[in-house]
Structure formats: C-alpha cells, structure tokens
Length: 331
Image 1 (cartoon, rainbow, N blue to C red):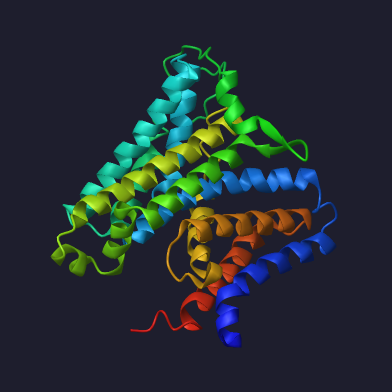
Image 2: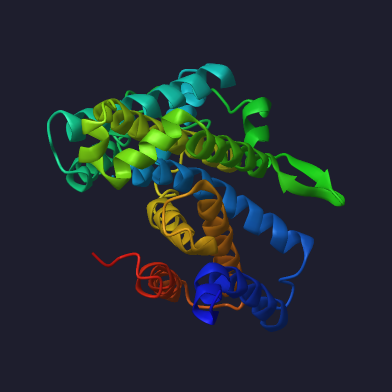
C-alpha cells in the first residue's frame, strides 16, 4: 500500500484525532465531561438525520427536506401534547407517521412523477416550513400560550417524553451519555447492518451504482427508491422527536441548521476509511467530526458566522480525499 493509499484510507481519521488534539490544547475546558455532553447532544440529532440522508444517497438520490421534516415533527410533538393534551406515545406515533408520509410522497414524486430529487425535496421543504407555522400563526408552542382562537394551551410535555432528550446515563462518570446518543448508536448499527448485510440493503447499493443494470436484472428499482425516502423521512422525524424532548417546546427556529449539518456529516462519511460511498459508519464518524468542530470553535469564541465557512472547508477537503486523490470520480 502506497503513501497515497494510506492518506486516502486513514487521512480523515488522522484529521479527526488532530482536531481533537488541537482543541484540547487551544480551548480551555474542551477535554471535560461537560464538553463531551454538549458534543454528544449535538452529534445525536445531526447523526440521526444524516443516517436518513445516507439512505437516499445509497440509491443515488438526495433529500433536502430532512431539516423541515425534523422541525415539523418537533412542532407536531409539541402540538399533540401541549394543545391536544395527549400522551407521549400518541405524540411519538404522530411524528413517525409524518416522517413516513412525507418520505412516501417524496418517493412518489421522484419515482412516478419523474420530478428530480433535488427539486421534489426542495419543494417539500418549503411546503413543510409553511405548513408547520399555520396552526399557531407562526409562533412557537409552549405551555400556557394563547392560541389563535383565543383558547389557552394547558397541556405539557410528559416526563417520559422529556427523558428522551434530557436523561443521561452514567458512563465512568455520572450523567455522561444522553439517551439521544444511545438512540443514535442503535439506529446507526441497524442501518449499517441493513445496508451491508441484507439483500434489500445490497440491492439499494446496486440501484445507486447502476439503476439501469439493476432494473434489467429484475430488481424492483422503484420500490427500493421509495423505501429509501421513507427511511429518510422516519429518521428525520426521530431527530425531531429528540429535539422536541431536549427543548421542551416547539420552537420554529430551532431546526435552521439541521439540514446543513446533516448533509455535511453524510458527505464527510464518504472519506472515512476511503469508502468513497455513502455508508452508515462513515456518516456516524462525520457527525462526530461536525460536533467536535462546532464545539471547539464555540469554546474558542469563534464568531458564529465563521462556523459554516469552516464546515465548508472541511467538507471540500473530505471530498477531495474521496474523489480527486482516489480517482473514484473519474469517468
């Protein structure tokens, strides 16, 4: 194996450890349990959404609606519990249904209406951004708020629901690992096993690699593509549930950066261990990288408006490692 091959395969992992070492030296308190908790919390929601994006990338598609699906699920959870005064189970089921239905509609538009995936999911993103504001006339949802009809919302988030976003498990030290991180790990393992070791997952890769060849081989290409978007929608709604549980309210502005961070994590995953393809392990590492990067920049008091620039630089470098150096992007 040449030096170039080593750089392609392990360069990003070395970059990750180098980033940790740099922030450990340059940012006071970076290596601390409190900092770890913040990183874990930010990674969890970003990672769950990124895993959904990965499912669509596997079949050669792309989902721009994940951020708005997550925000819609968060608002739906708040509405069900605070306004309709239902329990946590009803709220979770409602959120998952929203994600599945949006994913199904996205898949139907792309597969049967032949709308390009970027345009279909972009349109869905704008639709959901507007739709989630209508019930409250653009206001966030919280206990005691006055509804447009003059009634008062007296419901509240149940303790069981809030535990999804706020409870932490002991791990060497008390209260270190949030529940949301456990959810991310479980989902990452499930989607990794599904894509790598099941026939359905391998066929999804085949569709993304060469859709025409998969179709000629008798694979139900349309079904695989639709299911990829359903998976993306459900994962996005799970991210919205975790976000609602962490905030304890339906905040319409809280999901603004979810799309960019999730997409960055999924695309960075291409560079992990030289995979050069969408994969669950790489996506999880990409989400961890984004979380460490943002936490480190925040602790160094870097201006907020520079963070997207730095993320963009890292993403470009990762894609250069993946495609330019490896030659995988050449035709």
